[in-house]
Length: 151
Image (cartoon, rainbow, N blue to C red; front, top):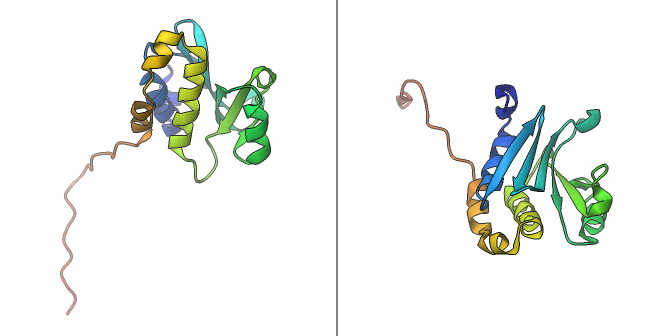
């Protein structure tokens, strides 16, 4: 993957979630990423797809769930071009108040629908949610100075 696109913290967190699932792998293309289990796609990362200015993750959901999610939360979910009518939904990653546990839940659900049954049973939602938690960056530089109390 090109270095410029791996600097996006959203993609890095999504990669941790997706790659925590059994036999998951990633393929990169320009500013997008595809996550697969064996040869089947279970999630897409889209960054400004066709110039729409949106950063999102697209996942497979149960029949009718995509329409229900879009209707209930139109600011967060939308129907992705081409694949929306086939049971996919997109969750915006560029909105404030994003819940990464929700992202992990959506990705794991998609994985379980796409993966072979044996692998789907091995998918651990707790492990994917744990991958969604950001790791605090170590502090670099000199230690902080203590302030003297003002008299």
